[in-house]
Image 1 (cartoon, rainbow, N blue to C red):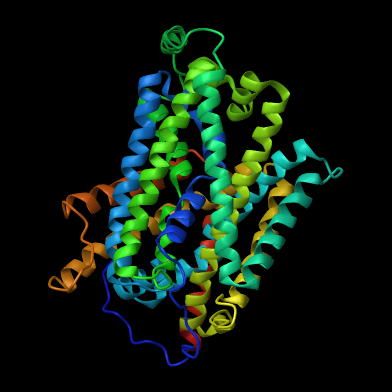
Image 2 (image 1 turned 30 degrees about the vertical axis):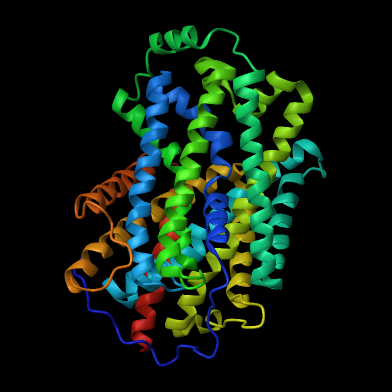
Length: 460
């Protein structure tokens, strides 16, 4: 794809109200931790244990996931600190590749990436809430839809209400992970010693349909899904106080905290259940607390997972509407989205549209009866495609403006961004090779955006 010079700002940009710096460093770190630490760490570890086959390889996968995410965070730290804007990746893509690519990304984020992520968290919340209190035949759907509506309403009240909610939820969520660590290391013991379990797992042959490299690659799909979300900090770059310094600090601090938590939690699962127990578990966190503290522990785990899902959904709602707001500023067809409610400090129209799309995806997941799985399939390929394109913008900016002031520079350039972009290509392949029909639906929705862009060009 050939790069284009940055376009002139369209005349119909609404500049009467704009984002203001209201988040300090701790708010930004809380958002990053809250977005990343979601449902994945309570679902993925058992699958990673199954696909890796040994404690050493399993832990190496989690370490590698942290390294890959840190590589991406370093690239985003340079982009966000050098080009702060409420549009985040949208802004980077617009400057590097032109308005059409940026608008296509904003369409994808509004209809696939962000709305799909909100639906994923809503389904996780619904599954665990139903275990605590069932609301009838369609209990999960009621819980999922209710979460989307309530959290959207909280954030529409104002940005301060949204960030306070996020900070408290993140504290509760991290406390839950600490409880898992304590239970795994001090209260639960596996049926067989960890060493014996590791030997048994290692002696079990891998399924013939997947070679060893493929098994590890599949494990990394789940690991990186669990680490996902740190990039959303870029959307707050124009709203973080002293953003030129704090955007990079928040990304690095947030990723460091999450990586440490994930390694400790994975070791706690291994200590409390053993590798074989992890691999056979459908709900690894609940099984761990059941073994440590009985039914009370299992009920507590349901509450923890529900809180984690609420935390991630709230953070995604808060940041996700920012791209739709940027889309409304630059695409006449969606100009109603580019209205910033200055009194509340939120893009109200963008949040309402985001809520409606997420509810439609909840309905889709309900219809397929595989809500969580359908939404993961739906979002993954589109997500990694634009991750790759965003990584490429760093090379373009360095070429166009070699002497520009950059508050933060990615270390070991160009090796670091090259590694990140290469990993994005591999993950794009994996998300198409290992997912189901939901991926085709997501790609289809992206193609609808291409058609809308072509129509828009003809109208202009």
